[in-house]
Amino acid sequence: TYRLGARYMTLTHTANTDWADAVGDVPRHHGLTPFGEDVVREMNRLGMLVDLSHVTHETMRSAMKVTRAPVIFSHSSAYALCRHERNVPDDVLQMVKTNGGVVMVCFLPGYTVERERADMLARDAEQKRLEKHFGEDTTEVQAGLAAWRNAHPEPAPCSLKDVADHVDHLRQVAGIDQIGIGADYEGFRGPPVGLEDVSKYPNLLAELMRRGYSASDIKKIAGQNVLRALRGAEKVAKEMQRATAGK
View 1 (cartoon, rainbow, N blue to C red):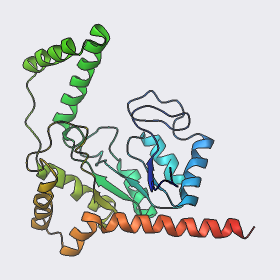
View 2 (view 1 turned 90 degrees about the vertical axis):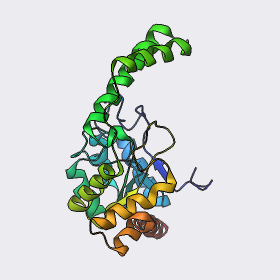
View 3 (view 1 turned 180 degrees about the vertical axis):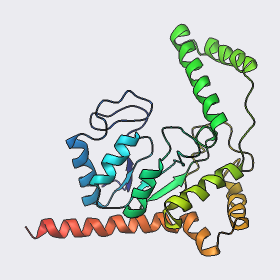
């Protein structure tokens, strides 16, 4: 995949791999296996960014202890503000600061505010129950979900200000150089009010400026931090390749 142009890889999606644990699955390895550690080292050698969104907190910590290059979280937020396991706890945020990596804030409401997290988990559980009962009959599943929603009204929606709160927390714990934007519009329903699509990015940046972020801060969040992390990964790769060539 690197030869085809890929420059970052998420270590898991929603299920465990043979060498790394994912959020949404039953932990098997409690982090990375020895082979998983070798995968991270090889990604460092190639200059491929390690993406730690979707992995468990244990896997985050395991990867952070192994990597020599900056990592990214391509679409994750602050666990202290919304306790979804996909989000990044403060001790890992401090590791990211030391590592020089970037946490790219996700807009998914279930990762942003607790009431949305609880609603998302309950809806997902009901969907799994219906799918187990009705199998491949998607019409019955959708009808069941509609009935469930009628009985369980949606919570008050989150807004761009809630997303900005996550940026504030990341700045407080990890620093301004460790923040990016990772909206994740493809793959979820119901974006925050004020951040309905990519055309609304300026609304978030304007909110951050109202909160005292400088023009330099905004440039970092909007893209410079990710570019710096990628350059850092490329630098580490060159160093590792030179060391190997000299042996």
